Length: 222
Image (cartoon, rainbow, N blue to C red; front, top):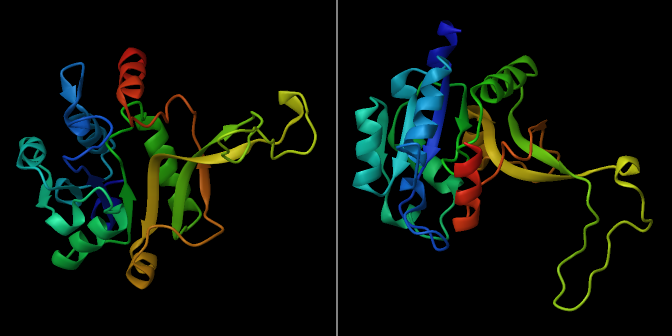
């Protein structure tokens, strides 16, 4: 495992801005901010060198947390710190301005504090074993789904079935992402347009904090 530390980057994007939950990334669970929880998890895997765990933020307060934990901290530009900014653009900025000798990048959003170290290790091994260029975590939904409408519910499935007889829908849960350096350099994107490789994770472990209710639920489960 130690020989692999040089070859992969752990990228942790953490803007200060949040429209639905103010200072979301600095919220605390058991005296640790969401940023610290994510950094400590990455370090515990013993998979990444400290210099290859990268915290990208526009906030000095957030970056200070990363410096205390002895990882690489990069101040993000204003143009890549807006509400409309993407992880793609933040990662591109980071790789363009720094010389990393890496094969690929694992991306951990700080809004998933229930992420288990065992899940992260299994995901890393899965990407390695299958020599993947890209992968994301997904969870399964067995419920009847409808396209959004202001007035009506129209099930996508034509036939109503018992949950145990249904084929599930998959949804992107944001827990972990992977992209090879080669693919990202060529496409400047974390994900392909279609046929994305996926890895199943538990829907409760994969709760993504977007609002106050999500945070309260995560805090209680944690």
